[in-house]
Length: 307
Image 1 (cartoon, one colour):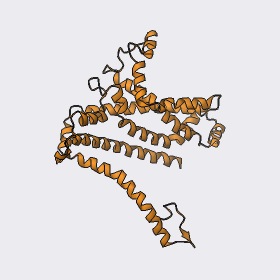
Image 2 (cartoon, rainbow, N blue to C red):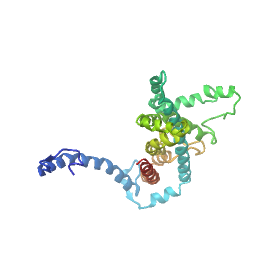
Image 3 (cartoon, one colour):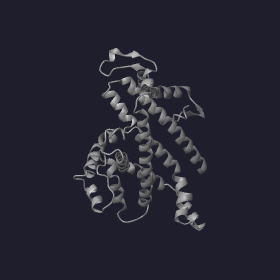
Image 4 (tube, rainbow, N blue to C red):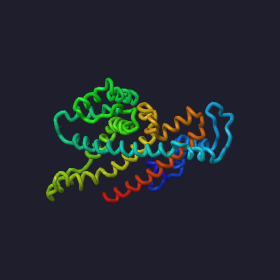
């Protein structure tokens, strides 16, 4: 136990009981705080999901069992929102991963101005979400948007309204999300690339491997554990993302971009039902837990291949 705590408590080859007790006393408060912060909100939300709890009349709270879940399962936009969110999450993190990998490989090379370019890549990530959303709405505007008019000047097919059409609203939101968050991929991939042993590449060259084969058989397997963990984090963050969708489309038009976080917000602040909002939230948790199990299984497999 003492060794797991990372504290040297060995005296004469044996752990002294008083040292172990002292370590437990010092460890216990932090452990209790961690348990409280980690479990109390979850337990409260779970209990709320089984209650009829009006937002502005909490004294009228009553236990209703599974009624909230029955009600949200009958909501006309529930499955549409989950379907939209799955498409939104998969498409946006796929773009982020491909672009992030390409940029990380570029920035891993030696060239003049590399450090300046590394700092420039982070620009979109540090930009506030609200400002980024407003700027993209402005740039894609069919009346004053510079990107819209540049594409139109090249006689390329272009939608009349990027965020106001059910056909183009979701792709537009995905594009803005990928632009905003791809630097996170660049940072994590680049950090891992810098730790790969160069002798692996030298051995691959001796065996006659070209650049593509070195990427396929050296770089990609070494990056795979980091890729999986990064995808897991981005999946959790993107699936739960509310601000970008709310700022760009508010779930419209005609519910074409509505996602569970938007549905939770509408249920809470338009229908004033805290219980049904909590029920939808727990359906989101279950969905993410399934995805997490898949990612962790893939992570274990990738680690086994490296050993």
